[in-house]
Image (tube, rainbow, N blue to C red; front, side, top):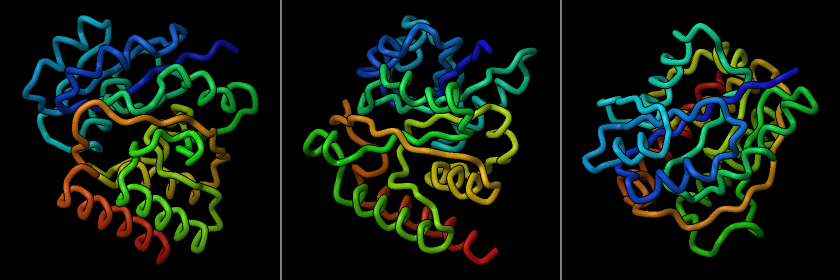
Length: 230
């Protein structure tokens, strides 16, 4: 079977990094979709020049941007087999996409998380709130649901039809954990692939601010407790 892959990249003021991200994505990807999330810099122009399809979502929020891309894909005549989510800040290594999608293609796995394991992380690439938040969230998912997740990593791949069936709804910081919780509830097959991680270009819009870190933490925990009560 010939798999088609679409990559979704939410981007807010990533003009300095987005071309590097797009340029390092393997050439077997069918379409790279950059969702400009109300940027005030030249993200749109740079992404278009690098060859991406560029959409604009004026409502700020990671989930808003992802939902914009999914709505765009849903309206196409032909849908991809696999959706890959990737950040636009160049903290991940886009060339690792091949390893991320491999379990889907070779083993028919539904859902794959790129896990930012400590031994492969550049020093300082993740803040303390990120590290602690990931540990707490994955520990609670293990406690409540028997999950084997070790990370809420944004670099991830999922079968398109499985993603649609999740009926994703979070508009902001809870997007990643919502996907993992709903995948657990639906008993999707899943695995993790260890990926390297480096310092991002620019300042994080979430972990780089106290407000962002708090809001993200509250949103993630609210999703976990919501599902633990169902």
